[in-house]
Image 1 (spheres, rainbow, N blue to C red):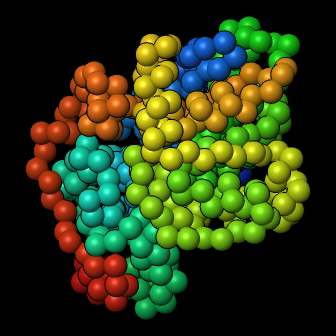
Image 2: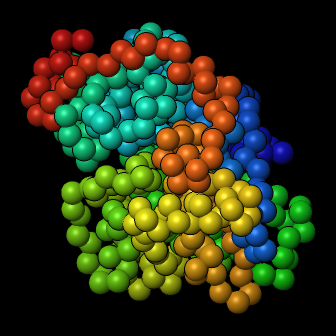
Length: 386
């Protein structure tokens, strides 16, 4: 099962720090949902990562991390940990829901004003309790910069016990390796294209998801190579072309969870490949698509295959269908439920998207968020008063 596979992988990562039974309990509680692979067309499968509580892939990492952090707080007898998280959409809801009601943890979710979908916003601004949503007058990169500056600030850290729940925290992104192994196990069990080599295609923004895949590969997962699918925020695509990494301001797209102009995990990618552009290019290719191309793919797959993608999954599907070579078959990561982008998707397919019951539940709540400027001193003084 997914839980059994994840437990074996978790032992490799965390087995020296956590008792076996406790780790098993954390894994089994975290993964109370499946991540099935679904055939879209010949040689192309979707790994559906939207069956968790907030209908996005980040449920896996966020729920695992919440339980891990609660365990260490209890073990070390700490009074309160303050989790800071920047979100371009899905991280906020997954982290907020993963940590909701967990004793000893306060969560501050920073998100860019007007740049996340209504449904995404509802998922982390309506919760209350130990979750505080901060609506930042800026972009995701500004939110991420505030979080990083907070960790670097000595005065703040001497007053508050700070932790991150973005993929800069290894406890958030490492558990994402679980579902790569589970996808491979399903692929073998279904007896699919066993004469062909497997390629994973990952819609990529902050590059935590694909980095978890590289870790899985290093642990022995038999995957031939990876494809990183970018939207118009294509700094990684440009890096592969030129060998030079040039961060730049993010631009808003319909695949908003990938609107990242300076991916945090790029440093990890460089480190894994000893800063060798040549090594990176051997194992990873990339593609980039603008909003028109994403929309066209989403519509085409819905009409021709009867499969409904979300804008991020559409990037993954298109990159895979364009780059798959002879003797290969591929799995792309479908990272969020299309209903999370209901308006956008409905406009593209001219059809109604049904909202699943667990998403509907969030829609009833009252938005409770606090406005915040992108100036670090304002953010710092807010935290110091908490």
